Image (cartoon, rainbow, N blue to C red; front, side, top):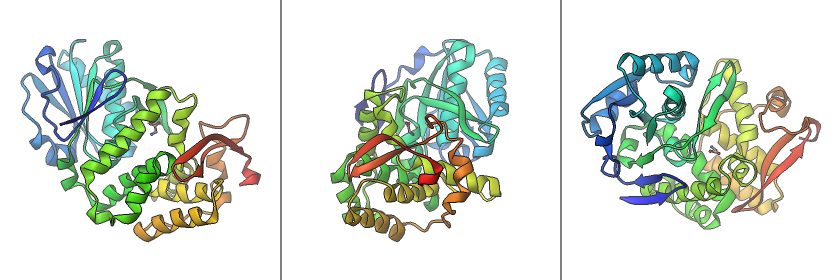
Length: 329
Ligand code: GLY
C-alpha cells in the first residue's frame, strides 16, 4: 500500500482494508452508504464487529440538513459516544456530508473516507472540506476538518459508470493544468482507456495534497484548485435550475474551456487544452455567458463585487485572484 502523508492523516492507496487504522480502539463504528455503495462496494469491505450501516439515498439533492438529521438520529439511537467512528463509503456527497455529521456529532467524532468514485478519490476525500448544500447554494454550510485516514482502492472503479469516471477525470486534468506539465504531457500521449488508474490517482492526490497542505484554509495557494470551477459552478447551477442537472466534471470541463480562454496563455496552449477536452469528452451545450451572470455574481469567492478566477499563466502553472466584472467577461 502506498502512503501519502498529509498534515495529521495519511492517504493510503491500493487497499481498502483497515490495517492502517487501530479499529479496535473505537467503541462503535457506523458505515455510511447509499443504495449504490451498499450494493457494489460494501460487500468488498472487511467485516467489522460492533458496526452498523447507515443508508441514505444517493444524489446531490439529498446532501442537505434533513439527511444530516437522519444520520445524527441513527448515531444517537445506537448510543454512539465520542469514541466512535464514522466510515464514509461513497462519492463526494457521502464523504462531505458524513464528514460534516461526524465533525459535529457530540462536538466531533473520528471519520474515515473510503472514496468510491474517481472524483472523490482525486479530490473530495482529501483536504478536509466537509459540508452540505443549503437551498440552491452548493456546499454553503460546512467546515474544514480532516479525516482520520483516506483509503483509496481502484477496485471500486470497476462498478463506476463510464460517465462518472470521465466526470472525475476533469479534476485530474485540472491538477495537471494548474501544477504539473509532465502529467499533462502524459495525459496527451496516453489514450483515456489505457490510463493506469492507480498511477494517475497517486499523482493527482500528490498534487492536491501539496497545494492544500501549503494553505489548508484557502487563503491563497489553495485557490488554484478553483481553476475551471468559477464558470463550472455557474454552469452546474444553470443546468440545475433548468431541471436537467449535469455531472460536476462535465461542468468543470466546460468551465476549464471558458477559463482557458481568459487565461494568459499562448493561442497554441489554449488550442491544445480545448482540443484535448473536446476530442475526449462529449459535453453538454455550453450556456451563453450572459445566462451565467446571475450565478457568477453569487459565487462565494467574489471580492468587492468582482468575480474571482484562478487562471493559467502557462500549462502547469496557475495564478489566483484574477478579478473580472461581468461586463469584462
Ligand atoms: N475541491 C477543491 C478543494 O478541495 O479545495
